[in-house]
Image 1: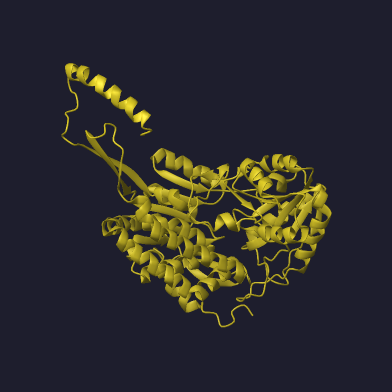
Image 2: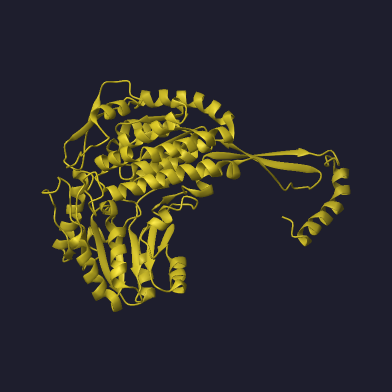
Length: 518
């Protein structure tokens, strides 16, 4: 039974949606993937609401920046504890909005807590003012401080609303910025509940504002007003946002599409690797930017691997109950189901073979679809190069490591990749040669995805910039260099003064090199 003794309730939904910045009465009906029924009605923001929220956020940001690292750390660490305390509510909301299983929803709880903890504790070390070597030692001194950019705009998709929000919003807050976040309709409750934990921990309400509504109005207004843009979504939309950011001369980090590859080398345990590959491809039903969509298997282990993969997926349980009882969940919407079915129909019509799955399962829920593995996929099929983003993975046989590597790199995308082998040496060689922003060894995506202290992002058509780690904090600040003279020696102003200082400055340059001083 879907709702069991669910913590989430219509009354709670109404309280949460009251936090959306929306001045009008217009709402959007948001369904749950589990049943297709309306879950709640989400207020719709306007362009004027966006502008008003940015104005209030700018005022709140001034005090937040002046509060300092220690005060911000206290609030963020208190929010970390509330995320863990409120995990059952957050799990309910993630499942009800996305159709995930409870286990896959828990990955988001863990990720959100990790992102909050890391940024709270790392901000002072990464962003604190520091002295650096001056151009003329003893005569000048130089230090660098970091100035918060102001209001960061965060556009968060529906698929991993909790963890992606935390990975973009929390470093902005830790850096001293305010945040205006556009929530996707299908993930707004989760985001609003996360925000409420931060407000209850002491975050000023105006500092983190949430808007919702059509991208053509609300998204456009956001990208017109904010001082930095974080976007997670399609490559096509990312290009448009990058163009606007370039015209406005504001920074942007863009995590975009992926057609992620998994390489199975000839020395693996086929059964164990098949279990990992199944999870890597179909966790959240493949609706994750770093999900695996291409599997390259060495011919020497292809038969046992394929048998194990088919058996694993045939035995998997599909469901969305609010408890730990299903292996895979639902697609998130009718649009997602339509895309999966279109890719499948096109591939089969052009000669691909369905190894396992391939069926819509309305007996479980309106948008459930069996995890599907195709073989015989060719370049004329849409599924070959286009990102499906749900429920389909393609299996290819290769002869040796180099062939697998060349095939994996033959993509316009470069977000995530994985390699499975018993040999650490082979794993490192392949990992170093893969064209991807992250590479996982003997795991599909979770090793890199959960490494909050390490940068995450893509190359090629998979995005610009990085979230997480030190670079994830540094994107929200502008470095300011402050230099002063010591008074020990006057720098030259006239031709004769330059003439007299040239010999000692040349001597200084050579001495610094000899001492290996930068």
